[in-house]
View 1: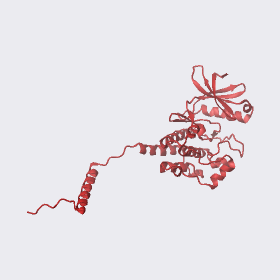
View 2 (view 1 turned 180 degrees about the vertical axis):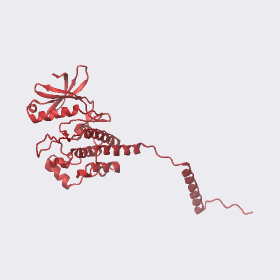
View 3 (view 1 turned 45 degrees about the vertical axis):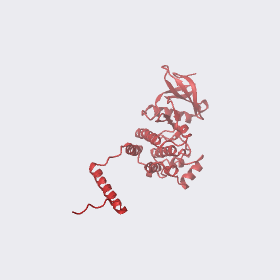
View 4 (view 1 turned 90 degrees about the horizontal axis):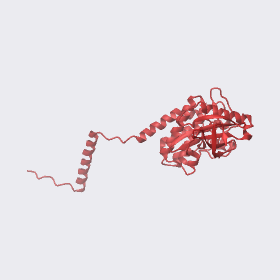
Length: 309
């Protein structure tokens, strides 16, 4: 099957909104081709969301974002060509259990860098979750901007009282439909929720409906990652919980702040142990010698005193 300039090779995934194909361009380069299903293409709102995603990705360029390669229409259904990432989703990786702590830190830092860039462009993602993170080796890329919000004009593509997102990774204000809150701060909650999943193997809130989610957030305290997994450093557990604060104002001020926290901590972990200066080593040697002598005297093992002439 030919869609635009691309030849479809195989089907990668299918959902309620669309299908993703593995395809090749005329030069043989592989792409991920996202096509809106015919029944969804007949819905004006669905077409608007799809077009918004294509326009958004067309203006973004960052190493931790899946790159936009082109878009068009095929038999009345819009399509979107994306960079093909040879790997798996973070959600698929988490089915094997929690990640090693250094890898979790690396993924969180890469996602925070991507979000910092997106927010500087005046946009918010609004659907940060493991399914929207693609892994290739230890590289992480954020994808699926179907729920993107342009903070400049506050254009929303959801109906009043309806939230499009994923249970367990919702920011509380998103679930409440509170439009007065910054969507960028909601992205920080999603970042914290993804980091939590990397460290513990599960979302911070286990919920399958809006009602269950709100009940969990309002009346149950999320257990810190360190309580679930003692080897998680205290600073990392605390940063994760800051991102998951119920009050958006108590979260980090920006994704850039999260990047700085992760970079500083990672630098401290990677730094070689500091060697004591020579004077300190000499003092330690003197103290050790005195302690040894005193111990021998107390045990009666000290050498007899020299005879007095």
